[in-house]
Length: 179
Image 1 (cartoon, helix red, strand yellow):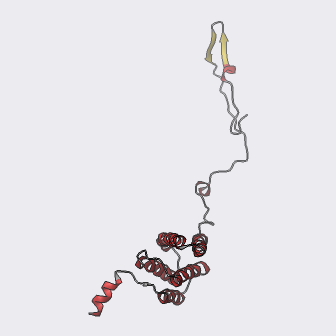
Image 2: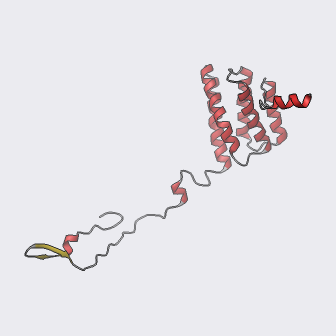
Image 3: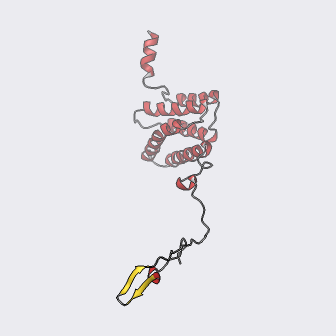
């Protein structure tokens, strides 16, 4: 028998005549369902992760830890590995920034990383720059709720490494304001 229902042979309920099988009898067939260890469908069954697994800290931890690991492993490789890791970071930064619940300091670090890498225009990072990027990603992993002052300290480390952390469009605005 099937788990969900018993299978019924309808031919057992047909009247047999000399000409063969006739119409089915009016006997109502009651199909009983077996009770098995089934549960009602929940929203968490329809989606890959439950609310507990989709909270901000666990999402940030998994994403940033993956990026940090890729940067660390690429550091041990050649320049192509480093470039691949930086490209993955560049692609992930807007997605990270779009998450709610970042502190002001962490948001500042993400924006500074984004603009730093964008302003580098694809030129390979120096060892100091690569170390600064890896360190900034590590700070996001260690403390996703950085205070604004601590976030600015990380941004300053990026500037010391030779990055331009301001948006490219800001130079136009600075030029207009300094005239």
